[in-house]
Image 1 (cartoon, rainbow, N blue to C red):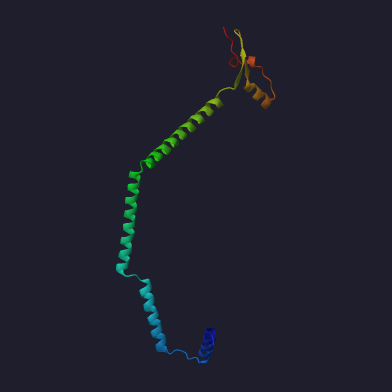
Image 2 (image 1 turned 180 degrees about the horizontal axis):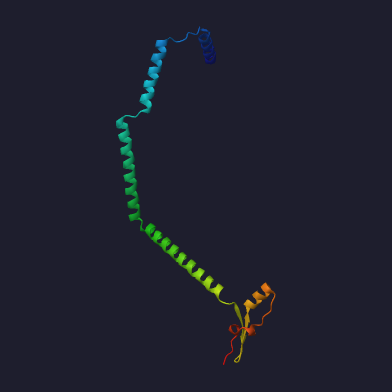
Length: 152
């Protein structure tokens, strides 16, 4: 007879026994023992609470000490931080300068210098081209005194 056969035989014998409902005193005792066990399991004692709190504080202190030692022993991390801050400041300054240049270029009239000689300079006023496209008008550059220059 194998072990599985013995287990099944025991299970058959146990299942053939008549079922008896538990008496009231048994149920009360069993539930009281269960409640007492649950209370002990989930309610930590004052000592356990204090020990967990002390362990958490100890870990925080050790983490702070280790972090401060790391930063003092590795000055290159401080140097990198300083370098990144200076790069960010330079980036902001360049952005501001670029925005000022864009504002200035939007305010000035677009003019294209084509060359010239001793007596004259040939300049093409691009704003007339833009106006012509917008309003379908043609205006010669010579009409606008600011668009050409004559050397004396």
